[in-house]
Amino acid sequence: MSTLTKSWCQPAPTRGGFAELRPLDLELWGSRLSLDRKRAEENQTESLLEITRAIEARSRELGAAALVLTGSTARNRRTQVSDLDYHVIGETPDIEGLSSEIDLYSDEPDAFLSKLFKGDDFAHWTLRYGCILFDTGVLRRATAAAIEHDLWPDAERKLRQAKRSVEFAQKLATTGDYGAVLEFSRGALSLTARWWLISHDVFPLARDELAEQLVGTGQSELAKAVEGTIHRRPTAAEISSWLSDARELISV
Image 1 (cartoon, rainbow, N blue to C red):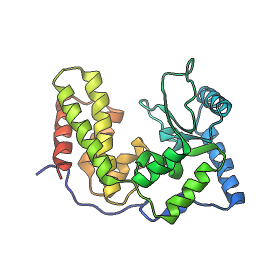
Image 2 (image 1 turned 45 degrees about the vertical axis):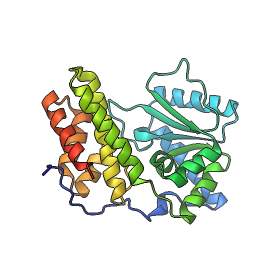
Image 3 (image 1 turned 135 degrees about the vertical axis):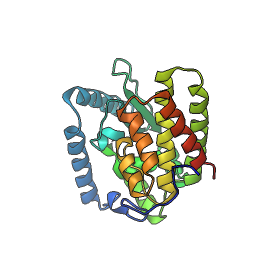
Image 4 (image 1 turned 180 degrees about the vertical axis):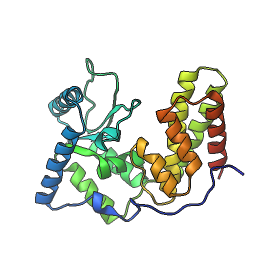
C-alpha cells in the first residue's frame, strides 16, 4: 500500500464557498477591482511591477477584455521557482523584451466561459484568486455564471493530466538529467496534489500552499513530496520514490 494514504478531512476553501467570487453588485465589483490592484502592487517588487505594467499596456492596446495576475504572485507566495503568471481575456500580447519568467495564458471571452463550464481549474482559479487588473465585464458575467450554476473544476480532467505528467516524469528520470527530472517531477506532483484536492472538494491554492492543504486532507507524504521539489534539491532516489507513490495514488 502506498504511503500516500487516501484518508482525508475537508479544510477551507471548500466547494460551495463562493465568498471569494463575490460580490456581483457593480459598485462592489468595482471595489474588488480596486482591492485586487492594490494586492497585486503589494505582492510585487518594483521590477516585477514594471513587467506587469508593460503586460497591461500591451493588453489594453490589443483591446483585451480583461487581464488577471494569477499564480503564486497573486497569493503572495512566490518561491525561487515561481513564474510571473497572467491570464489575458483577449488577444495574446507580445512579451518580447520582458523577463523570461513570464507565463502568459490567453482566452477569448467565449472560450473562457466554455472552460469554466468544462471544469478547467485554471479558469476557475483566475476568477476565485487572481488579482483582476482590469475587466470590461466579462469576468463579472463569468462569476455570475459560476455562482448560478455551482461550477467546480473537473477532477477527472485533472486526474488525466496528472497521470500523463507522472508517467512522463518517470520516463525522464531514467535519463539522468537531474535538472529536467526535478522540474517535471515538481509539475507532476503538483498536478497530483491538485487532483486530490479538487476530488475532495478543496480548491487548490498556489503551489507553495498545496502542502498545507494536503496535510489538512491527510496526505502528509504527498505534501512532503510537493514541498521537497519546491524548497530542496532532493536526491534522484527520493524523487523516484515520490513519483512511484504518486503513480499508485492516481491509479484509480
